[in-house]
Length: 254
Image 1: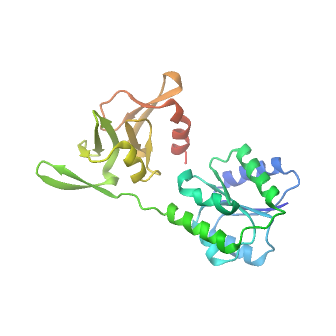
Image 2: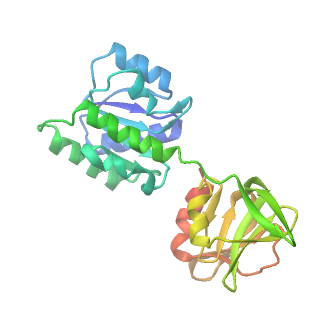
Image 3: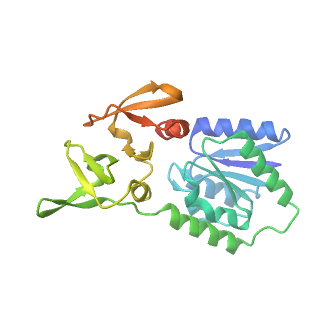
């Protein structure tokens, strides 16, 4: 099997190569490429590989643009740090994806899926592109940049960049800003979790949705949990739920 790796993080590329070789000992890694530009040039000047492992976010842009610039005849397994909800389109037409950090069992299952489909008729290029275009629309979803809040008899616009965290208290939702002020919002924490950029905000429990730059300290807590100290907050019990600890660490370590 000939495999092309398209990944812009050197350590991730090395790990991916190691995993593939462990799963398919006779695999030939044709090349490791880190940009959209170089990927297009390689695909235009070389025979199609049996399989492509492709990161979505590359050094010079989203890898979906590769499909706009050249014909991709090979099956693709995407790797990505994005949440699953944004990539449901990849399940159509047998396009598979794996969330980072790449797990060996998931990669093995994806490769086995490819092998089982290798003898069957591959998805038509136009259907593949339709699937990618739909996923691209979902990936480029625009998140809220500001909230309008009431201050006395006045309305005020607050930039999301100024918000350190959101929290719920007695059925009311607040946004805490960098100037230590809190503002009431007409949204639940559940709603906010889908409105703000997940690259900056993480929901640590049912009550708190925090920005990475709001975290002042992290302390080991009972039952494998973490206690956070947030800037401008006097709450001494801001706890990362146990079932969210590993995901929280992965989010911070991007």
